[in-house]
Image (tube, rainbow, N blue to C red; front, side, top):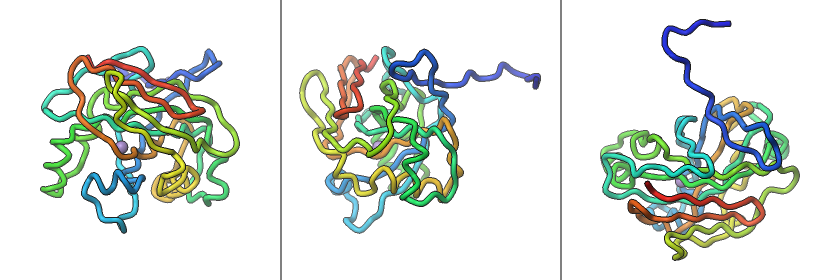
Length: 226
Ligand code: MN
Protein backbone atom coordinates (compact mmCIF):
# COMPACT_ATOMS: atom_id res chain seq x y z
CA UNK A 1 0.00 0.00 0.00
CA UNK A 2 1.43 3.33 -1.10
CA UNK A 3 1.62 6.07 1.51
CA UNK A 4 0.76 9.60 0.35
CA UNK A 5 2.32 12.87 1.44
CA UNK A 6 -1.01 14.70 1.09
CA UNK A 7 -4.58 13.40 1.29
CA UNK A 8 -5.27 11.17 -1.74
CA UNK A 9 -8.23 12.31 -3.87
CA UNK A 10 -11.31 10.08 -3.87
CA UNK A 11 -12.22 8.22 -7.06
CA UNK A 12 -15.09 10.13 -8.73
CA UNK A 13 -18.06 7.83 -9.36
CA UNK A 14 -21.33 7.72 -11.29
CA UNK A 15 -24.25 5.53 -10.15
CA UNK A 16 -25.37 2.64 -12.34
CA UNK A 17 -29.05 1.79 -12.83
CA UNK A 18 -30.05 -1.38 -11.02
CA UNK A 19 -26.65 -1.81 -9.35
CA UNK A 20 -25.41 -1.07 -5.85
CA UNK A 21 -21.88 -0.77 -7.26
CA UNK A 22 -20.86 2.49 -8.97
CA UNK A 23 -18.92 3.30 -12.14
CA UNK A 24 -15.47 4.74 -11.31
CA UNK A 25 -14.51 7.67 -13.51
CA UNK A 26 -10.98 7.54 -14.91
CA UNK A 27 -11.18 10.46 -17.31
CA UNK A 28 -13.66 12.39 -19.43
CA UNK A 29 -13.15 12.86 -23.15
CA UNK A 30 -15.53 15.08 -25.12
CA UNK A 31 -16.29 15.39 -28.83
CA UNK A 32 -16.63 18.88 -30.30
CA UNK A 33 -18.87 19.77 -33.25
CA UNK A 34 -20.43 16.36 -33.81
CA UNK A 35 -23.80 17.65 -35.09
CA UNK A 36 -23.84 19.65 -38.35
CA UNK A 37 -26.46 22.17 -37.18
CA UNK A 38 -24.50 22.89 -33.98
CA UNK A 39 -21.26 23.20 -35.95
CA UNK A 40 -23.02 25.88 -38.04
CA UNK A 41 -24.43 27.74 -35.01
CA UNK A 42 -20.86 27.89 -33.62
CA UNK A 43 -19.60 29.38 -36.89
CA UNK A 44 -17.80 26.23 -38.02
CA UNK A 45 -17.03 25.23 -41.58
CA UNK A 46 -19.13 22.32 -42.91
CA UNK A 47 -15.94 20.44 -43.82
CA UNK A 48 -14.42 20.60 -40.29
CA UNK A 49 -14.34 17.11 -38.79
CA UNK A 50 -15.26 16.61 -35.11
CA UNK A 51 -12.40 16.63 -32.58
CA UNK A 52 -11.70 15.86 -28.93
CA UNK A 53 -11.10 17.85 -25.77
CA UNK A 54 -11.19 16.74 -22.13
CA UNK A 55 -12.53 17.49 -18.67
CA UNK A 56 -11.05 16.25 -15.38
CA UNK A 57 -12.68 13.14 -13.90
CA UNK A 58 -13.83 15.02 -10.82
CA UNK A 59 -15.89 17.44 -12.95
CA UNK A 60 -18.82 14.98 -12.77
CA UNK A 61 -21.95 16.15 -10.95
CA UNK A 62 -23.97 13.12 -9.95
CA UNK A 63 -27.78 12.82 -9.93
CA UNK A 64 -29.40 14.86 -7.17
CA UNK A 65 -26.51 17.33 -6.89
CA UNK A 66 -26.72 20.89 -8.24
CA UNK A 67 -23.69 22.50 -9.91
CA UNK A 68 -22.77 25.97 -8.73
CA UNK A 69 -22.74 28.80 -11.26
CA UNK A 70 -18.99 28.89 -11.97
CA UNK A 71 -16.75 31.90 -11.38
CA UNK A 72 -15.20 34.12 -14.06
CA UNK A 73 -18.00 33.86 -16.61
CA UNK A 74 -21.04 35.85 -17.63
CA UNK A 75 -22.16 33.34 -20.27
CA UNK A 76 -22.52 29.79 -18.93
CA UNK A 77 -24.00 27.52 -21.63
CA UNK A 78 -25.79 24.14 -21.60
CA UNK A 79 -24.88 21.36 -24.05
CA UNK A 80 -26.97 18.19 -23.74
CA UNK A 81 -25.02 15.08 -24.84
CA UNK A 82 -25.19 11.31 -25.01
CA UNK A 83 -22.38 9.92 -22.83
CA UNK A 84 -20.58 6.62 -23.51
CA UNK A 85 -19.22 4.73 -20.48
CA UNK A 86 -16.23 2.54 -21.35
CA UNK A 87 -16.08 -0.85 -19.62
CA UNK A 88 -13.24 -2.55 -21.49
CA UNK A 89 -9.92 -1.05 -22.50
CA UNK A 90 -8.33 -0.94 -25.91
CA UNK A 91 -6.08 0.98 -28.28
CA UNK A 92 -6.37 1.47 -32.03
CA UNK A 93 -9.70 -0.34 -32.08
CA UNK A 94 -11.55 -0.80 -35.40
CA UNK A 95 -15.06 0.72 -35.61
CA UNK A 96 -16.45 -2.81 -36.07
CA UNK A 97 -15.03 -3.83 -32.67
CA UNK A 98 -15.52 -0.52 -30.84
CA UNK A 99 -18.94 -1.26 -29.34
CA UNK A 100 -17.37 -4.18 -27.43
CA UNK A 101 -15.69 -1.58 -25.21
CA UNK A 102 -19.00 0.04 -24.19
CA UNK A 103 -20.37 -0.64 -20.70
CA UNK A 104 -23.39 1.61 -21.01
CA UNK A 105 -24.76 5.07 -21.70
CA UNK A 106 -25.80 8.12 -19.72
CA UNK A 107 -27.20 11.59 -20.30
CA UNK A 108 -24.74 14.42 -19.68
CA UNK A 109 -24.50 18.19 -19.93
CA UNK A 110 -21.21 19.68 -21.10
CA UNK A 111 -21.37 22.96 -19.19
CA UNK A 112 -19.32 25.60 -21.00
CA UNK A 113 -18.04 29.07 -20.09
CA UNK A 114 -18.81 30.31 -23.61
CA UNK A 115 -17.19 33.71 -23.12
CA UNK A 116 -13.89 32.11 -22.06
CA UNK A 117 -14.16 29.69 -24.98
CA UNK A 118 -14.66 32.56 -27.45
CA UNK A 119 -11.60 34.33 -26.09
CA UNK A 120 -9.57 31.11 -26.27
CA UNK A 121 -10.62 30.55 -29.88
CA UNK A 122 -9.71 34.13 -30.83
CA UNK A 123 -6.28 33.83 -29.22
CA UNK A 124 -5.54 30.24 -30.21
CA UNK A 125 -5.42 29.25 -26.54
CA UNK A 126 -6.50 25.90 -25.00
CA UNK A 127 -10.08 25.33 -23.85
CA UNK A 128 -9.40 23.98 -20.36
CA UNK A 129 -10.77 26.97 -18.47
CA UNK A 130 -13.81 27.13 -20.79
CA UNK A 131 -14.66 23.43 -20.59
CA UNK A 132 -12.80 21.67 -17.78
CA UNK A 133 -13.87 23.67 -14.74
CA UNK A 134 -15.21 22.33 -11.43
CA UNK A 135 -18.67 20.73 -11.66
CA UNK A 136 -18.76 21.14 -15.46
CA UNK A 137 -20.11 17.65 -16.20
CA UNK A 138 -23.58 16.92 -14.73
CA UNK A 139 -24.49 13.33 -15.59
CA UNK A 140 -27.37 10.88 -15.08
CA UNK A 141 -27.01 7.33 -13.80
CA UNK A 142 -25.39 5.01 -16.35
CA UNK A 143 -27.67 2.48 -18.06
CA UNK A 144 -25.81 -0.77 -18.85
CA UNK A 145 -26.21 -1.55 -22.54
CA UNK A 146 -25.27 -4.11 -25.16
CA UNK A 147 -25.92 -4.00 -28.88
CA UNK A 148 -26.82 -1.12 -31.16
CA UNK A 149 -26.26 2.31 -29.55
CA UNK A 150 -29.06 4.78 -28.75
CA UNK A 151 -30.40 6.57 -31.83
CA UNK A 152 -33.43 8.44 -30.52
CA UNK A 153 -34.37 11.93 -29.44
CA UNK A 154 -32.04 14.09 -27.34
CA UNK A 155 -33.67 17.02 -25.56
CA UNK A 156 -32.96 19.73 -23.01
CA UNK A 157 -35.29 22.24 -21.41
CA UNK A 158 -34.64 25.19 -19.12
CA UNK A 159 -37.44 26.13 -16.70
CA UNK A 160 -39.78 23.98 -18.81
CA UNK A 161 -38.93 25.68 -22.11
CA UNK A 162 -37.39 23.45 -24.79
CA UNK A 163 -33.96 24.66 -25.87
CA UNK A 164 -32.44 21.61 -27.60
CA UNK A 165 -34.44 18.93 -29.43
CA UNK A 166 -32.64 16.72 -31.92
CA UNK A 167 -31.86 13.10 -32.78
CA UNK A 168 -28.76 11.16 -31.73
CA UNK A 169 -28.81 9.46 -35.15
CA UNK A 170 -27.77 12.84 -36.62
CA UNK A 171 -24.30 12.69 -35.04
CA UNK A 172 -21.52 13.15 -37.62
CA UNK A 173 -19.35 10.50 -35.92
CA UNK A 174 -21.55 7.68 -34.56
CA UNK A 175 -20.70 5.95 -31.27
CA UNK A 176 -18.57 3.23 -32.87
CA UNK A 177 -16.60 5.83 -34.85
CA UNK A 178 -16.13 8.01 -31.75
CA UNK A 179 -14.77 5.13 -29.67
CA UNK A 180 -12.53 3.99 -32.54
CA UNK A 181 -11.20 7.53 -33.12
CA UNK A 182 -10.57 8.09 -29.41
CA UNK A 183 -8.71 4.79 -29.16
CA UNK A 184 -6.29 5.93 -31.87
CA UNK A 185 -5.35 8.96 -29.76
CA UNK A 186 -5.44 7.42 -26.26
CA UNK A 187 -5.42 3.91 -24.82
CA UNK A 188 -8.97 3.65 -23.53
CA UNK A 189 -9.54 1.98 -20.18
CA UNK A 190 -12.47 1.01 -17.96
CA UNK A 191 -13.82 4.14 -16.27
CA UNK A 192 -13.44 6.43 -19.26
CA UNK A 193 -16.48 8.57 -20.15
CA UNK A 194 -16.93 10.05 -23.61
CA UNK A 195 -19.32 13.00 -24.10
CA UNK A 196 -20.35 12.62 -27.73
CA UNK A 197 -21.17 16.22 -28.66
CA UNK A 198 -24.23 18.45 -28.53
CA UNK A 199 -26.89 19.26 -31.10
CA UNK A 200 -28.04 22.77 -31.99
CA UNK A 201 -29.82 25.07 -29.56
CA UNK A 202 -27.10 25.72 -26.98
CA UNK A 203 -27.75 28.78 -24.85
CA UNK A 204 -27.18 30.58 -21.57
CA UNK A 205 -28.00 29.46 -18.03
CA UNK A 206 -28.61 31.71 -15.06
CA UNK A 207 -28.49 31.03 -11.32
CA UNK A 208 -31.68 29.27 -10.24
CA UNK A 209 -32.43 27.82 -13.68
CA UNK A 210 -33.96 24.34 -13.67
CA UNK A 211 -32.35 22.15 -16.35
CA UNK A 212 -33.94 18.90 -17.51
CA UNK A 213 -32.44 16.63 -20.15
CA UNK A 214 -33.31 13.33 -21.75
CA UNK A 215 -31.93 10.88 -24.25
CA UNK A 216 -34.63 8.51 -25.45
CA UNK A 217 -34.07 5.01 -24.11
CA UNK A 218 -31.09 6.07 -21.97
CA UNK A 219 -32.52 8.22 -19.18
CA UNK A 220 -33.09 11.68 -17.82
CA UNK A 221 -31.15 14.18 -15.80
CA UNK A 222 -32.29 17.23 -13.88
CA UNK A 223 -30.48 19.85 -11.86
CA UNK A 224 -30.71 23.43 -10.73
CA UNK A 225 -27.90 25.93 -11.27
CA UNK A 226 -27.04 26.83 -7.69
MN1 MN B 1 -20.02 19.67 -25.91
